Length: 118
Image (cartoon, rainbow, N blue to C red; front, side, top):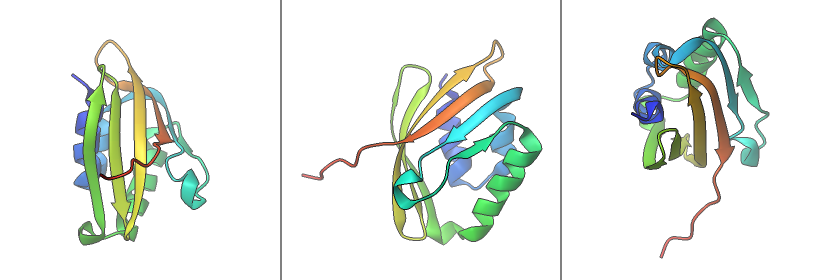
């Protein structure tokens, strides 16, 4: 089971506790998905800091201004998704490693090239 499918659901639901349930006690979260709009790398290595940061992001955008759309998956550890926040869409690809219990130990987000709509 690809834990990042559940990650996208929790992200869309703005569920910080659900997100934390996916991570091992020791992990690296490295999100560079916002670099095209000038955001610095978003790197966290502990649950309290990651949870507080995600709650802060969720507080910035109401559910009406926030949408996460799962586009596709690959293998058991890759997702392609779009995050729309405040009218700006960030096309992302996420890749993770998991431990023996299926908990995320490393998660990296990169900018996905925008696809031309036919």
